[in-house]
Structure formats: structure tokens, C-alpha cells
Image 1 (cartoon, helix red, strand yellow):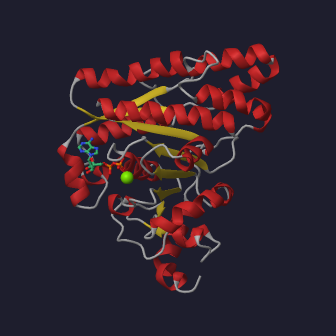
Image 2: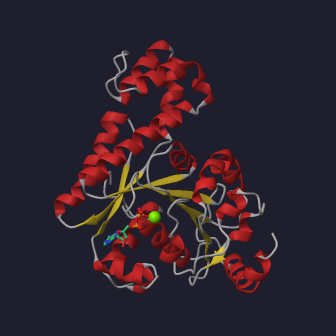
Length: 334
Ligand SMILES: Nc1ncnc2c1ncn2[C@@H]1O[C@H](COP(=O)(O)OP(=O)(O)O)[C@@H](O)[C@H]1O
Ligand SMILES: [Mg+2]
């Protein structure tokens, strides 16, 4: 794409060299990059806070990291990462002004961490993103990074949910407030039904799944786990496929802006509801305190872990990162 190279070439080359020199922090048999999606079902719950700080810490650990702003209507991840509003972003790829996602990656002040910003024209981009979401995932898996972090948009639209479900790991940020918890359940419910509706092996059961998704259904489905029973009874093989698809939804719950010990407990009850009501194994990966250092860092356009590395907040996010990487136990189940 004309102009991109001249803007990015010098600093991007340097960063790419640094990125490529870094050894894999952990050798693993799985294919890299690993894709993380950070959702929340609501705006202002800390998706960008988590995306920026988690990406930063992963890069500090020596991993090659790419953070992507998929909040197409409210892109601000660049600010959280201390990057000036990039001239080019994901919108340029969606509009096919470039075929190479890597052209859009901008270095950050943290060696090993690059980012792709959202779009400056969200209206036209969102509809076209729907068409290109499969391409996006296949492109992402060819990029030279160990970890890719997707900062998702607010809400539980099919597009956002599909990004969440397609990622290797999902992180769900929730505030200890009824509205946020309510939206998080809506998000999980959508993730549940989208997973089933997009599974080709369950094609014959679409009418049952769609009917079951209607809260006023006449099938006797009172909770999503009832649906599993019904499908297993109709066809035991489909019941097993159903079970397998559900096992792929394993959200990592993060409670953000906690102020009291009751707030911390909310993560456990959410995991309990996921188990009983949805039959989903959610993991309570960690919590983040409400701290003034967050807005101070945002004003300074730096991630809090970089600006206030000795704060409680940095310690919490570091603990959360370790739990997400499986290096430390989660809060629940332990
Ligand atoms: N733990 C926290 N403590 C204090 N303020 C926070 C915390 N988490 C988020 N905020 C503030 O809430 C606002 C929304 O956070 P943000 O990460 O942008 O949410 P989202 O990306 O989900 O819309 C920001 O202004 C941020 O400074
Ligand atoms: Mg955001």
C-alpha cells in the first residue's frame, strides 16, 4: 500500500528485528500464534485496560506480541499503549487498501510489542468486517508473533461473539455491578448459541437450537443445559457433538474495579452460574482493584504496568497474566 512503508519502515524494521530476535519464551507443541480475545459485553468495563497491560507484560516476558483494536466504533487501544493515532488501521485491510496485515502494525515503546489500530470510519467497516472475519483469522495465524491480543468492541453482537469464540483463549472483563454482570451473562449466552449454530455437525438441529434460544420456547428448555438433554435424547451422537462444542467455551473471568471483598467473590458466583445454568467451564483468572493509577496512566498515555510498575494494580495484572498463561493457579477453580 502506497505510503505505508515510508511511514513505518525505519522504526518498524528495528522493532521487527527485536521482535524476531526474541526466543520463544515457552516452547510448545501447539501452533503459534496463540490468539486471545478480550470481551465484556459492555463498554467501559476495562477491556482496553486489560488488553494493553496484558500485551505489555507478555512482551516484557520476551514474547512477540501483537495487540489489535477490534473495537471498530470506539478505537482507543493506541492511546492506552502510548501510540499516536496511527494513520492506517484495520479499516485499510477491511477496505482492501492493503492485503498485508503486518503493514498496519505499529511499534510501541515496549520492545516486542506492536499494535494494529481500529478504524476511523466505523460505519462502513463494521458491515464489511462480517464478510472478512474468516480471512482475518487465517491472516492472523500467519503473522510472526507468539501472542495476538484482540481488544473487542462493546456489546454482544454476532461479530464480536464470533471473534471471541474463534480465539484460542477468551477473557471476559466484568465490573462488580448488576448491569455489567447482566451483560456478561448475555455475552456468555450469545457465545453459547453462536458456537452451536455455527457447528456444521449440528446443522440438522438448528430449528431446535433456535427455538431453544428463545426464552419463551415451547420445548421445555428453561436453561441452556436443558437443551443438551433434549438433543442427547433425540440423537446421542449429536449430544456428544454438542458436549464437545460446549467444552470449547472456557471463558477466563476477570472482575475489574473491585473495591470490597464481596466484589472479589462475584467472580466465583459467575463461574458457578456458568457451570449450572450453561454447562460451561468458566475460570476465574483474577481481579483488578479500582485504582487511581488507571486513569493517571491513561492520561499519561501509558499502560499502568509500565507507568506504575510497583503499584498494587501492576501486581494484580501481573498475577492475572501468570494465571492466564497457566504459570500460577486461577482463583477458581484452583
Ligand atoms: N481498575 C480500574 N480502576 C480505575 N479506573 C478504571 C479501572 N478499569 C477501567 N477504568 C477506567 O474505566 C474507563 C473504561 O476502561 P476501558 O479499559 O477503556 O474499558 P473498555 O475498553 O471496556 O471500554 C477508563 O476511563 C479507565 O480509566
Ligand atoms: Mg476499549
